[in-house]
Length: 216
Image (cartoon, rainbow, N blue to C red; front, side, top):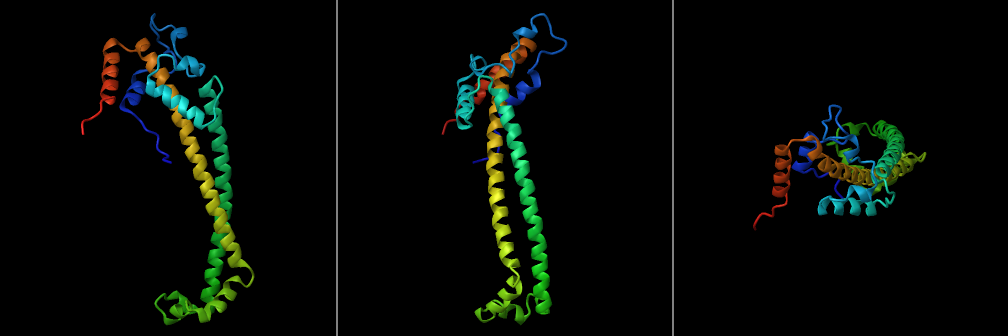
């Protein structure tokens, strides 16, 4: 249920020394056609990829119900759709919250007008209003015109919209996680094409260290 995107040191390394597209000053060994691109079909992308990367790419694809060959492109479109949907939900929630805020201020003013003592929370009158004997009078004051009922409805709607927003945000993170993993696969394949041997060796050493399991 986390909305965090895990990042490995090797991921950062690849984004520093590799590239998703052929560099403009490509050397002879770096022919554009030899470059791996994120737009390629998934079955081609995962060839030669690590077992972990394959598991993440395939697992997230299943979880998100993505099945098009060009998986990165499909994921990108889904992300755009989710962002628009989340923006719409946020806008709806904002309307509910604005109306709820106005009602809250109106109800507070109404109560203070009838009981000026409410300005001082320690006044005996404030405590007496919590008693059952005064409940009907308080209820009539705040809900005589249905304002309190409307306030409760808006509160419920706002909470529902917040749940919807968070659910979509979690799905967005899964999509971004998938896209990042596919990009990592591409970057790893392209690293030997643009980096020197020393840099490639450093990356290999780094990945080996990440795979180590510390003793108990």
